[in-house]
Length: 64
Image 1: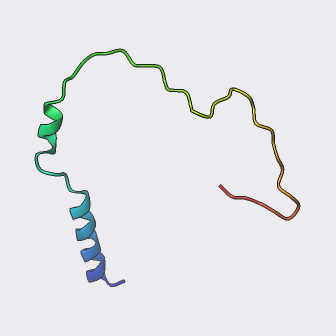
Image 2 (image 1 turned 30 degrees about the vertical axis):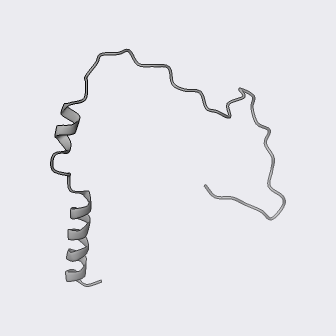
Image 3 (image 1 turned 90 degrees about the vertical axis):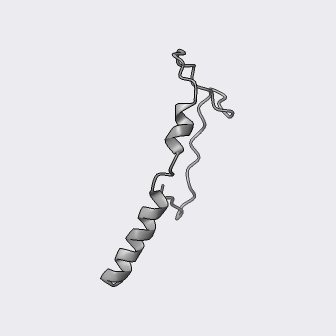
């Protein structure tokens, strides 16, 4: 990639992440309240039991 192409790529990225004019005005009209934080929601699949460890078969592996 040449320097000119790299500069053009940077310009495209700057344009994509540039703030939208007037975006702060929308946030200014939202009500600001001092409500206490709510409890964190529980996961839908949380059955509070530990899941068993199921080993991979020989020769298999995984990467996270």
